[in-house]
Image (tube, rainbow, N blue to C red; front, top):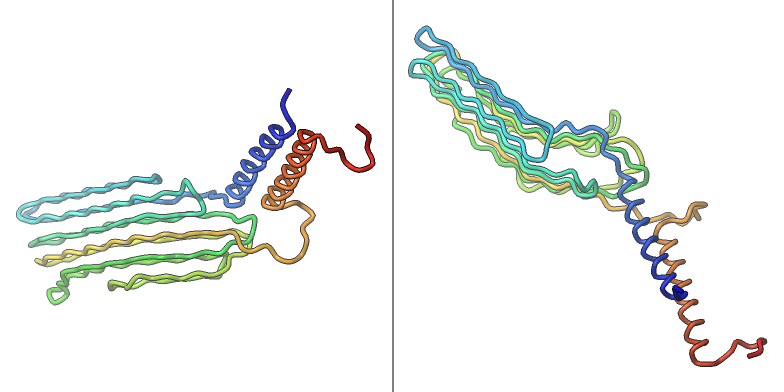
Amino acid sequence: MVSPVAKTIIVLMCLVGWAGTAAAESITIFNDRRAVSALAQVDDSGQADRHIDSQGPGDALSADAFASAGTSVANSVARLTSSISDPTHLSGSGSALASFSTFAPAVASAAAVFAVDFVLDAAYIYSFNGTFNISDFPARSNGAFNEARWAAALSSGGSFLFNLGDTHTAFPLTVGGNLPAGTYHFLVETTGDGNTERPATVDEDSLFRFALDLTPAPVDSNPSPTPEPTSVLLLGTGVAGFIAAKARTRRSGVHPIGRGK
């Protein structure tokens, strides 16, 4: 026969598992749009070479494209390593490189994009931390276009919680606030692009690293008709204390007032 204390321990273990499951289920990622892409193209000496590559979604993504014609070359590389297995902690790092050295028309572009859509069934507090770095070798004087850019945004419908972006290296960014229950769109990306119709050398390199943490918001003072996981756990702890005390009373031979032996 299983003792009352053992039964209580089993119940508490079930309650703890239910509480953890309830917290995880209150955040649902319903659209995973993580991706990388790369393009490289050159036209030289009457020859043309063009290559594209893309991959996604997934936790470890890479795309590479290399083109060569005559004495001209173009190279593009994109990488993204990220995780969405724990919806309360979204994190990742990505990079994009676009370069060419050409004596004729050329195009190079690369992009690393972390983008997900998720639903919150309860209120949360968010904290975003990101680092963005850009390095480039400008060649605008000879008519070439080149640019590296990064962006980070969290929105719901047509409203932004934050919307950041630039074409220059950014200092480490930290923003935070409250998120009521609802549907959200989260994006972090970096891109590198270059094109020319004349002899030029372009090298655009950018990268990012980020973490978005979500923690349950404090419960308001209004009583809820549905027990919260923590409240149920505390109730179970009280029951466990009562049963344990009753078991000790029986072992000590002391009987409650008003009952016979």
